[in-house]
Amino acid sequence: MSKQLPALSLADLNAGLPCCAPISEQRIPAETATALAPAFKALGDPVRLQLMSMIASAPDGEICVCDLTPAFELSGPTISHHLKTLREAGLVDAERRGTWVYYRARPALLRQLAGLLETGGPASA
Image 1 (tube, rainbow, N blue to C red):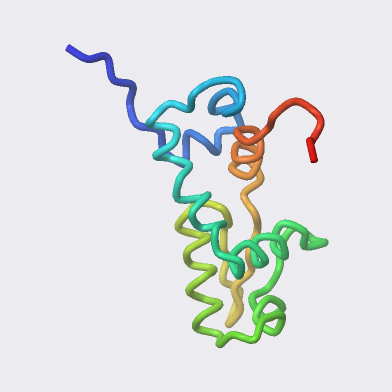
Image 2 (image 1 turned 120 degrees about the vertical axis):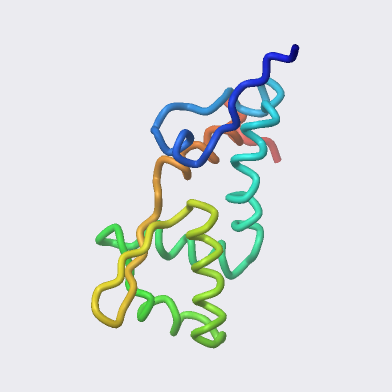
């Protein structure tokens, strides 16, 4: 009989507790890799990475889609698709207010991703 741990979910990772040691210290467990891979994949697109940056750095902690769309030379539906991908990956939350949708970063998951990539030492050239 194998002693398999239950699969992690984004809810587990957003609990604010460290998911695991940085990858520079030990191998990441398979279930953790499976849970975090969609977030890394979502951030692997330049437009989504820029959108995430805009959302995470919004002065009031949230930003309207009406402020995101004009920053790109893309159609509204394309921006909506990218935002949906960020939502599905668990990186942002969205709230509809009237005709507009406001986006907020999910800082717990961003901390998990950052912590996983932490090397602990000074950056080398």
